[in-house]
Every structure is written in C-alpha cells, then in structure tokens.
Length: 435
Image (cartoon, rainbow, N blue to C red; front, side):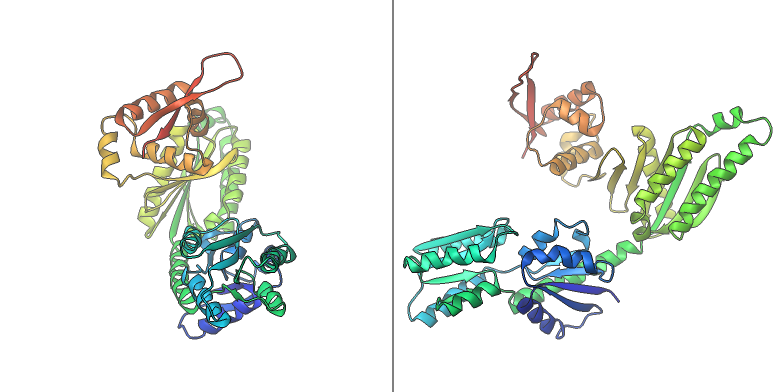
C-alpha cells in the first residue's frame, strides 16, 4: 500500500482528508500541513523517505515544491482550483454585503495554471474593477494583507478573494468581506481520480521488466593483446565481478554472453533509481579494459521484448559513438543519459501523418525530428541556428546545416531572421519549427 503525503494549509489538508475517507482506494493519506507556504520544501526534506507520493492542496505549494531536490512530476499532483470558486466567493460575499460586488481585490501566485489565469480574465469582463496582487512563494503574508487593506481603506473595493486561509482570518478580524479560495469538493474528487490513475501508471512502470545489455567494445583486440598466459582470464573475471556488483545492487538476474557482453534483468523502478551507479560501472569497466563501454536499457512487459528494446538502445548508442546510457521503452520513447549533459527524452515514433509525409521527402528520420523537438522544448527556445543544433545534438555544423536545409524545403522549419553578432564574420540564419 502506498503512502500519500498531503501538503497545504491546515484547513485545506483537513478538508482533503475528510473527502478522502469517502472514496474507496488502496492509498494511505497522511496530513502534513504548513503555517506558511514556503515550509513545503522543509516538509519534503523531512518526510521524503516515509512517503511514496505527494498531493498538494493547490498550485502554490506544488510550485514551491519544484524548488526541492525531491521534486518528481511522476510522484506529485496538486488539486486544480476551478473557476467556480471565484464565482462562488463573489456570490456569497455579495449576499453578505447586501449588493452585487463589482469591485474586487484578489491575490494569486505569479506563476499560474492556464485555467486559473483564464478564470481571472473572465472576472475582469464581469466586474467594474479587478485588482490583482501577484506574489511569489517568498512574499510575506503581511505584504499581501497590506495590499488588500490599502484598497479597502481607499474605498476602491467591495470584497477580497484570497488564496491564503490565514489572510482570510486576518481580514475578517478587520471587518473586511473576504472569501478564501480553497479546494472545493468537486475539485478534490476530480483530482483524486486523476491521482489514482497516476499511481496505477507509476506502479505499472515501476514493475515493468527491464533488460540491461552491457558491452565492452573492441574485446577481440583485448584478447589478442592479452593472449599469452592468463591475462585475458583475469580481465574477464574482473569485468564479471564489476557487472555482478551492479546486478546485486539492482536485485537482478545475470547472464554472461562472453566477449565483454552481459545481460541483466530487473524491474524498471530499481534500474532508474540506480542510473548514477550504472554510470560508475561503465567508468570502472573502461578503466579496467582501457576500452569504451556502453549500456542499452529496454523496458517492456516481457523479458523477450525488454531484451529486444535494450539491444536496439545499444545499437543507437553505438551509432552515436557516445559514452553514455540509452533507454528505450515499449511506448517508443528514448531517453539519453550522458554525464556531460542533462538527460533528454524523445519519441522514436511520429504519429502526425502530415509530418510523416513531409519527412518522406527528406533523409531526416522521425527519430531525429522528434529529438530536435524535444531538445528545443527542453531548452525553452523558439529560434535557433545551425550551430546551436549541432552543439545540442552532438553533430557536425555541416550535418546540422544539411538537416535544416532539408526540413526547410519540406516546410517543417521556417527561416525567421538573422542573428546579430558582435564579432566579425557572417551572421547566422535563424530558424524555428513550423506551426
């Protein structure tokens, strides 16, 4: 049974836990409330080893959690506050003050979900005046209170809608009509359904069969160099020992195929948590043999397909000639791990038929195109030149320029200007992916 830590203001956490009891599930929920939102990071640090998943009361603690080294999108979910909370607040407070509130002050995190931002935009259309206090996770409660209080004292607003229950309490004490936008019942139920699905998906991925194929290159050369005496036998024993140590670490099954090739079988979750240890093994194998070592990893539902995907992953590593690890999943995703750069995940499949048809007229594979898209998304850049593409995809400038030329002809990228340079030389052409 998985344990779920619920993080948020105490009132939010209590509300969530009360609704959780009404829903049948196999999860154990633990309430971990905070006094101020920035305590979220401390809670994650203290309890990360005793909790499997995290549920946040809203976007504020979830956004703060992203600053933690324990942040994981796969293991975390926040309750989406619907637009209805705004309307309910205005309706309740309008009834309280005896007239329709048309001048409203609200506070909201400076990084907002799209739906939340849309809700605020719609409020502006309905109200005469809408004042918005945007805050970051470290903004003090006093600063937000002062913002609302000043508007109230200047008679610019009729009511206040706040994201903090502590602000609601303080403003009520001052006699200001205020409504706290907390998670409503329907928001909690909807999020819990999504959360249960996320947990099931994670469990499936954790228990997927995983194959690792470890390959020491140029092994025939090693055998020739160490042909006399027992040299090659000692090398083989040392290599086997190094790989067996990893096999023990991931609780795996070991096969020695000879000639510097080994296959290990384990589960996906254990392997992915030990990527750094696998990198250490690669380094130790290379020190022992003075030859490159590579690892291909495959995830699948059966041993046969896991090994097949691992072999394909190893072939990709060989083609690229990189010192790293490549993982291929049964959904077509490819993840590259390289100690010199961040990991990158992309798809080996393109399902957009229009793109597939355009790629047929080029020598660019769907895998390369998907990797370009993934890299640009990771870097959060819209425009790029051939040199940037070459650097990020570890290819020559000439090859990158050829790819761009073909994609330009196929209409998959478009020319969008020139890059100004402070140094001498020709300005570089700038491109962006076609919409």
